[in-house]
Length: 233
Image (cartoon, rainbow, N blue to C red):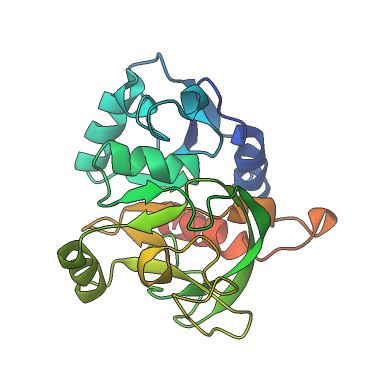
C-alpha cells in the first residue's frame, strides 16, 4: 500500500502514524510537506494529528488553505482514500471534504486520556477490520474535539450510515450526555464520520497509538489492517 502523510507546521503525530502504517503494511509512507502541490501515485493520503499553524483562527482552518490541499481535494474527488485523525479531521471539515465542525470540548479543557469507540459501520475500508458493534480502546488528545453539525446534517449522516465511530463506555453503552462515555460532548457522541462514497474518514482519537504491544496494546490495528486489505487486496 502506497501511503503519504501530509505534514504542516505544527504537525506532531506524523511519526506515530508512519510507524503504524509501516508496521501493518510493511512499507514506509512518504512524508509530504504542505508546500508541495502533487501527491504522486498514492493509494492513501493521511492528515495526521497535531496543531497545524498553532491552531490559530480555528483548528485546521489555516492548513485547509495550504497548497497541498488542492491536490488532496482532487485526489478525494477522483475516489482516493483519505484518513484524517484529530487535527486531520479538523482540516477535513475546514476544507469541506467532510461536513460539520470541531468545537471546543464541552468542558473547555484539553483532554489527554483513553476513550472507547463503538464501531457503527463496518463496511468502509477504514472500519472493515471490525464488526458493527465492536468496541475498542483509543487514546485521545485534543482541546477542540466536540463534533457538531446541523440537525439536518446529523440526520443525513445517520440515515446514510456515515457515522463510523461513536464514543461509548467500555461495554459499548452510548450516552451522549454522559461525560464518562462522551468526554468532549460531541453531538450524538459522534467520534468519526465518512464521506458520501465512504472513502474519506475523519476521527478525533488516535488508533495509530495502539498498534504495537510494546507501547500499550493493539486496539488500533484493525483500522490499518483493513485499509491494507481494501487497497492492496
